[in-house]
Length: 326
Length: 106
Image 1 (spheres, helix red, strand yellow):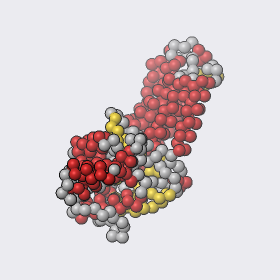
Image 2 (image 1 turned 180 degrees about the vertical axis):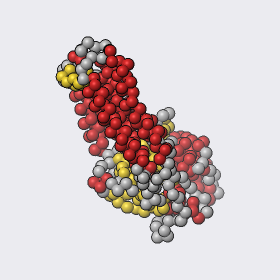
Image 3 (image 1 turned 135 degrees about the vertical axis):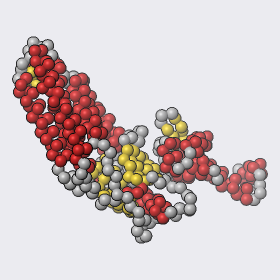
Image 4 (image 1 turned 30 degrees about the horizontal axis):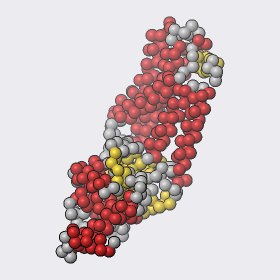
């Protein structure tokens, strides 16, 4: 695993961006103090009436404590030695989403309460909840991007072991493998359940409350549609109808390929997954059984359920031979 | 054999053998061109050839998909015709003579 000990300063923009939404809260509070009712509404019952309130100061303090903890976690992860680049980025991004979410709830509540005489006059949020979730997610993307590009993995120069299968390719013959895995049937049940809950919420509570669920359902379906490609550049997994976002393992990072097998229970379900030990990635889109296993540099591996693991493994080994012996 | 014909022949063979089934989406021309390190127009020519043979559908935005009707039968037929033409060429027969032979057996 790549250890990134140095260059801690590169993580500080991410930590600063994690803190930024929370820092805005006291500033906005000061600017709006004369226009906000005190206490503020913090919960509405199913009929849309306010049933819980909190003082402005209490709400600001709670927000700052939650966001402060997130910033603290981000700071610790930025400074602690011997953590992989990816772990740092994931933790800082999650911290940023938390901080932005907490600050967003404060801003949403204050924005809706602006110029209301009392908390009871504030109507329950609708589209604001969707905006809040999207805003927090967008802030996570900004912070993830601020972490910069991942450091390059080590390259491999040796051809795969001689005992592994190869394809019978003529000199100059070009070969590639590409397939779209079928979407597992269970995904349609999950989709139906999510849409059902969304419909009930839309009718019983508020149409906007259902929007995040519909978005999640859409993301689930897109994430389960994956094209798996092997060619002279390496292995590419492209998600969604446009093959984007995508994961690419360059040929230079692949040690060898062999048919293997996958147990879905060990990966916790379908989709693109990270193994528990953090060393493996899995594209699990079929039932338990045969899969292709790629050994990668830095003690990593990639498992993918493909239609014909023997052929895919042989193709990868042949491509590695061509790249490393010419 | 030109590259476009080779690519078309690979797809045709996969359809005939059932490795590609009706409704399967072929990779986008740009993607396949990058994967095989050929010009995108070569792939588009191969796809157009397969469309003319009735094997695939090309739709804007949807890309190339294997046709839902009798695509596999058509692929086998086109494959068989190619084999027939090759055999005729080896025997020195021209197209009319090959067709005449087909008529005689029909």
